[in-house]
Amino acid sequence: MRIVVLTGAGISAESGLTTFRDSGGLWEGHDPMQVATPEAYADDPGLVQRFYDARRAALTQVEPNAAHHALVRLEAALGDDLLVVTQNVDDLHERAGSRRVHHIHGRLRSAWCTRCDERHDWHGPLADGPACPACGGSELRPDIVWFGEIPYGMDLVEEALEECDLFVSIGTSGVVYPAAAFVHWARGATLELNLEPSAGAGDFAESRRGPATRLVPDWVN
Ligand code: BJW
Image 1 (spheres, rainbow, N blue to C red):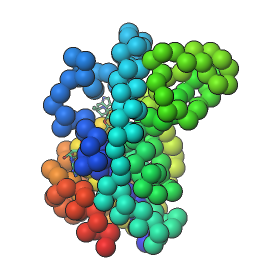
Image 2 (image 1 turned 90 degrees about the vertical axis):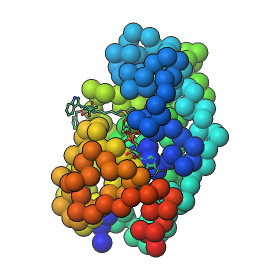
Image 3 (image 1 turned 90 degrees about the horizontal axis):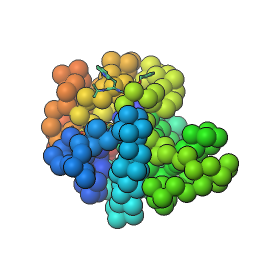
């Protein structure tokens, strides 16, 4: 049985990381959705760097939850027949122990040098303009896919969806493309696990409602 699991912010919510559209709040007076854009970075790079520095720092305060751990057990059973595709930029899947994880929107703990195009594992701040370890320039930005940019590894994801027997979407609102269209790309059965119906809930063959820490272990067991 080949399974593709798509995860969104909802799977990390019970670890203490705020989701995008459920947060209801502003960050330094800005809508987070307005900050996650190349235009915002061009206008005010310091603001955008501080937004991601704060979120990178917050990773040290959180731990994977029962939903992340359940996906590790599923991988132990399925091996390479499970692929976790995540929109999340946190590292909670990896810290739980998942091995086959693909981050389509990038990773907080990676910095991308727009001068030499190298990527570096990064745990500290970027707002203070550190030097790129490869070229020495000061053009490191968060290695994050913003609106209007092309998500990572879409060929790999498309192929996995075309070959899968089951596609499971966990904790995503279904409003951001291309991930919102994966349910249409999937060849096999489809299942949504979410606290609330997503924008595309009607496109799934089956939907279950509740917190990820209950739904995901129940589904995996
Ligand atoms: C729980 C729970 C619990 C809570 N248990 N559940 C018009 C039409 C169609 C498309 C477009 C359009 N105009 C522009 C576009 C394209 C655009 C887009 O989709 N815009 C829409 C807003 C309309 N997309 C892009 O630009 C993308 N690029 C692109 O399309 O390139 C073209 C291309 C594609 C493919 C191949 C080749 C070319 C790039 C999108 C980049 C998204 N970036 C962000 C920010 C960066 C990362 C970061 O800072 O963290 O990624 S936006 C933000 O949304 C973030 C997330 O990954 C993403 C999705 O959010 P998610 O995970 O769904 O979170 P929420 O908060 O929305 O939902 C939480 C869910 O959890 C809810 O459903 C809750 O119910 C649930 N939940 N607690 C279970 N305990």
